[in-house]
Length: 169
Image (spheres, rainbow, N blue to C red):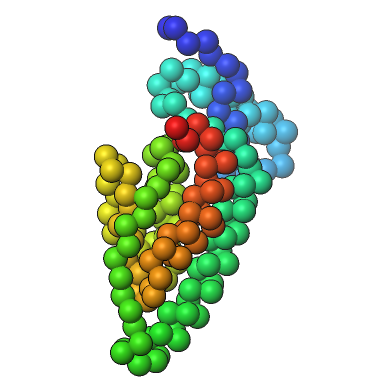
């Protein structure tokens, strides 16, 4: 095996396995069960470390929080905006397909960018062209394609590029 095993290589798996053990025995008060759960939580990831895929490392947790807050605020705001559009006149709708050039390289970052776009009502990431690095975004109402592109890049892509800095060429 060319790669060196670390005892605490997968801390979330360790925590998860410990909690699963405690749930299985249905006893959160016994020190013995906590110790045995922690032992299993350390041993199982250590034994299977070579089988784990290369995990993405988060380099900037504060920017991940910024990204999550932007998503939350935009989802809430977009719900009201879409409700107003739907209850209004259909003539006022200006649907549009916009080609969004993206700079993130990491697959998880691309997925998170597409998810952020799709989770906010009124927009959906319709397709991703990995070769051209273009995401096709459908907007229910868009009067300025460039403004939509700039908003997505500033609110979603910029924080993701700091969360996954290796995703920048």
